[in-house]
Image 1 (cartoon, rainbow, N blue to C red):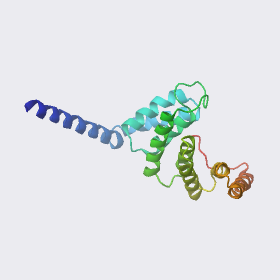
Image 2 (tube, rainbow, N blue to C red; image 1 turned 120 degrees about the vertical axis):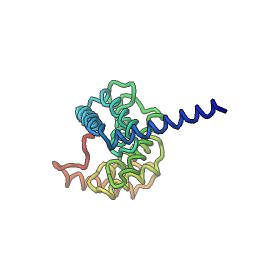
Image 3 (cartoon, rainbow, N blue to C red; image 1 turned 180 degrees about the horizontal axis):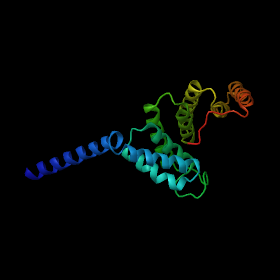
Image 4 (cartoon, rainbow, N blue to C red; image 1 turned 45 degrees about the vertical axis):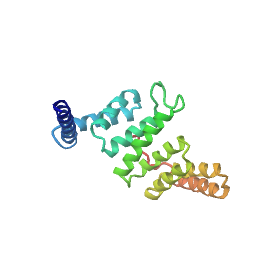
Length: 193
């Protein structure tokens, strides 16, 4: 009986310690450390130093699991640069990596539902996982929030083509081309990370 009580008390202590750590990391004195780590990760991502950025982002999402942009960046990184590769898109993504990316991107959309770029990359992740209907919903949501994410129109066209819906596919491709021409030289709605 005493052993069980001691184990339960120890478990409660460690759970409480974890909650305090997460709270202090997100809101307390460690906020500047978080900002430095995130800044370093963003710098590495924009320099396309994915190998170096990955462990930093993994640490950030472990310590601040409810940070929408950290989850977005980590999920996007998993899609762009799978583990154990020397070049982006060198090999096909493994199911586990795709599912991890989806988990982080879904979490990011729930934390920041009006950020179009997150919905766009969630569409990619669903598409890689062969969940075409969910991919279509994510791409649609992305263009509802930001019609300048023109690549979503192209991807929807491809999905319609896969469904053998040629009229809808042509419409999406035409919208993509029209918007691309209008945006030449302008920002396409994408950030580097």
